[in-house]
Length: 248
Image 1: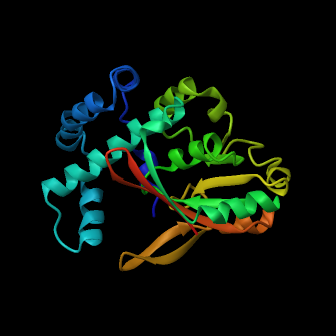
Image 2: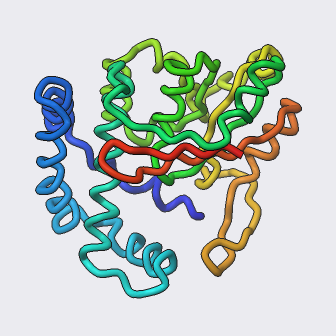
């Protein structure tokens, strides 16, 4: 994984983000999901700087040359996860259907008072797990995130639920990691994405979809420093407002 993604500008528009949010919260999920089809088509056809990389990924994941239907589906699924995050952060997560797998792993840590490091990836929805951990299960979760990468989306999420945004620890800011040892020692859980390298990160090469790829050493190093176990989590979109959450 290289750092080229950091040089891409945020493709969000504050006006349209606000409009979609209003429609989702006031007119319902059915209407906003219909609107996502032309919006997805626009990004696939006109705002497609990531299209070559997307094709390469799908070629490896599918084992064949991806067609336009495959590309559209991937972009559309991503758009759906953004809308579903709005519902969670606005306290309307009852709109979603969740299938939980391995949640007893987190419940064991919560019951024992031992914290852990939740390591996810840019697959599915990171924010839904963080928010649901707080609103549904009473788990104490803080998220290490690069909020500078998408400032407009970060501002939107902050406006929907300031309390949840307080649990975000900005990566790269001075003093961001101070006090994490006390948090995990008290049973708190830290969540971070482990599939993107930031400039200056120590890296390790792993086999990924048939070829070596670079991954950051940060999750393993942080778990060692804090003396907590790592728990892999994935939150997969499996349909309209439906997610499968896996912990191991």
